[in-house]
Image 1 (cartoon, rainbow, N blue to C red):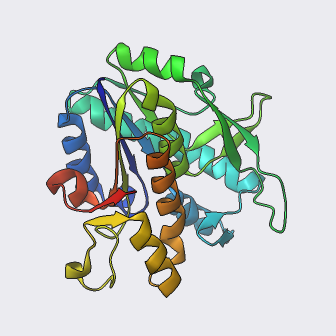
Image 2: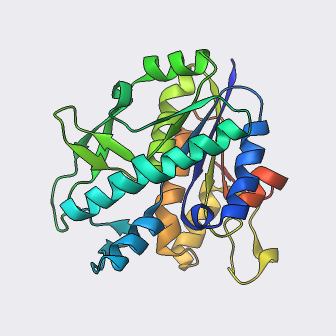
Length: 256
């Protein structure tokens, strides 16, 4: 089975041009088919504040009203995606930028309002495996932003970690998929101020123990939930960490 590498980037990395160049250079050098997934929430937050609107973020998740969706479209599917594609082309990697509506790659449904209404946020219902396979077989690296659609003309904002995880799971039958989810810290750490507290391998049992002890911050929980879900559904390897993960293979590997 052919190997497939999926990398998700966002957050601090997208706002650090030098670090981003290093990661993209390492990503482009990896042989074989690959997919890059990106968010860009911090840039949306910064632009929103510059325009005088304080964004609403609850438990690390953005409330996406019509105004925030417009900002996300401009930045995710426009500026950020186009810049990433241009940078990778400059590194000799043939790639193309996509949102979920392109080729019907990622179809979603609008999240139903319950105790909290997240607005124009999409939960994934379908991944177009055939289209992804066609692109990869043509030697094209898809660069996916975190904009999706509902197949009825409505664009939606979908968590980039979730997109990377769902795409990895969907392609797991055709490929031996390795998934790396980049973030600010260098991995899962007992003490964020102490690099020596990095957990190199995090099992499900250890995760549940740390969760019960209150060691893990709320912000990391959705990422770890996605990571364990991917492993349970056939993804070969999942790791979390910062740029050192792709440059020096230093981070946390998630294990069942």
